[in-house]
Length: 101
Image (cartoon, rainbow, N blue to C red):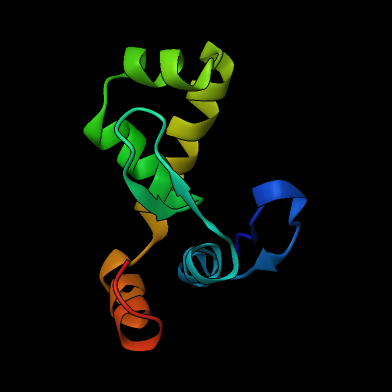
């Protein structure tokens, strides 16, 4: 079974289920502000999803001074998570426990 690592600000906590990782990132870490539009959201998966679903790659690169390698790493993380995760479960858990995402 795949092991999922948080990696936010050096957090090396590991999770067997990707859903547990996303809930952890959303509840154990501070929310961040999108440098493109100012939206405040949970760090980790939801921040990456927002950046690549709501903004162009060029906007992301400019706002975050990101390299092509950094963009690809985040795009790959988003893709890998979305292939494995039951996002509805994550949202239900977050809405049931700690309020809206």
